[in-house]
Length: 119
Image 1 (cartoon, rainbow, N blue to C red):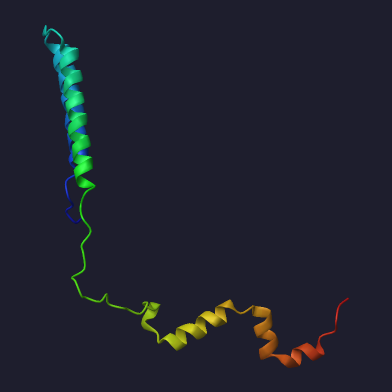
Image 2 (image 1 turned 180 degrees about the vertical axis):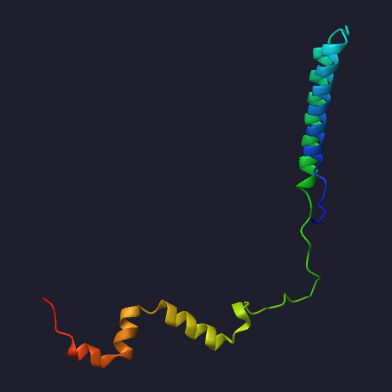
């Protein structure tokens, strides 16, 4: 597995949920009297949201690489699957697009004469 860039938002939310779960488990064992815990939690979540917004805004501002002045973009031919020459590839495509009945009539014209016409 290739290592990848750490996703800071996912890591942060995971840590927050882990801390909330640990806080809940600790509050079941130990009775702690803290005034205005709700305000602390709300302020922390608001702060975390603001940090997330700044991170999202900053990551969206990556400039696109600019070509060097005076440099011509390289014109490349489209890649043909299988490494076939373009003529062979074109004939295969034409053959696939051709209707099978028409191709059979071209290859076997003698069968057309022997077959009675149905009305």
